[in-house]
Image (cartoon, rainbow, N blue to C red; front, side, top):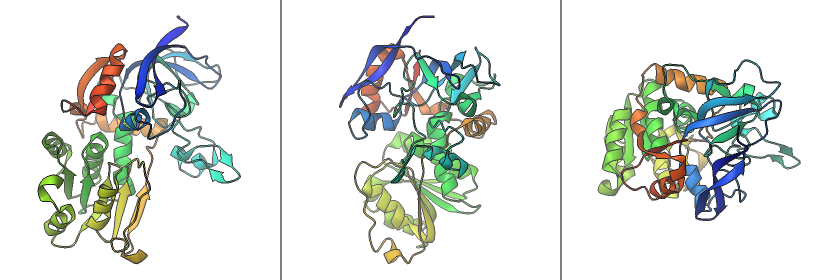
Length: 359
C-alpha cells in the first residue's frame, strides 16, 4: 500500500486544491476507508468562501462512500474489503451529548458549556473525505454496511443531505393532513420535501425560483410550487393558498434572513419553523411575525443526524424505492477534477444539483 494519497485541501479563502498528503495511520478504534465516491456540499462552499472557518491544510468533505481498507485492532463486526458509508456526523457514542440523544452535538465540554456541532468532524475538525482515503473515528459507531443491491450513487445522499433534509421534516413534527412549506429547493430542501411527503403531509408547497428545481420538487413530492420572484409576495401567496390559515410547518433550507422570515411569517399560530440553513450572519426575529413571543410558534434548528443506525435507516428508505434520489446527481467528476467540480458547484452553473466525485 502506498504511503501518500491525493486530497482536496483548504489552502486559503477562495482556494481548495488537490494536493499530496500522507495516508493516515489507523488507531485501535478507527477504520481506514478507501473512498470510491463522494460529493461536494453547500457547507464546503461556505468553507471555500471563508464564511465558515477551518484550519489551512485540512482535507475537505464529509460524505464518504467506500471500502474498508484497514481496521483498527479494537474494531469488531466489520471486515476489510467491505463496502460501507459513514455519516457526515461521526459521534463517539459515549459523550454526554450522545447519551442525551443529540449525537450531532458530540463535542468536548468546557467550563463555558458544550461546543456546538462537535459531532461534525470530517472536513471541519479532522481531515475529510474528498480524498483517496479517509480515517473514520469510532468506527463501530459510524460505519454502516452498504446492501449489495445498492450502487455508490444510490447511497451517496445518505451521509448528509438526505439525513439533513429528513430531520427538517422530523423536527417539524409533521402529522398526517399537515400543510408544509419548504423554502429553497436545493439538494437539502428537495430531501426535506421528500421527507415531508414520507411523514404524511397532505399538502407540500415548494418555494424556489429556478424552474428545474421547482420541477424536481414535484418529483420529490411537492403538490404545489411558488416562484418567489414571480409572486413578489411569497407570504401573501402562501396565505392565499391556505385560505389565510397559514402552514402547519415551514422548513427553511437556505440560510438567509429573507427565507427565515418568510418561513416564520408563513406558519399558523402554534406552528413550527424547522431551520436547516447554515447562517453566516446574525438572524433577526421580527416582533410581529413572532407575535411578541405570544404566538406559540416553535423554532427548531438541526444538524444532520449521523451514526450507523441513522445511515442504516437512510439506506433502507433508498432500498424500499420510496423516493428516487438518483436524479439529484447531475454531474460526475474524477477526484483529479475536483477543482473544476468546485468551480461548477460554487457558481451553480449548468443546472447542477449534486456532483459525484469518483476516485
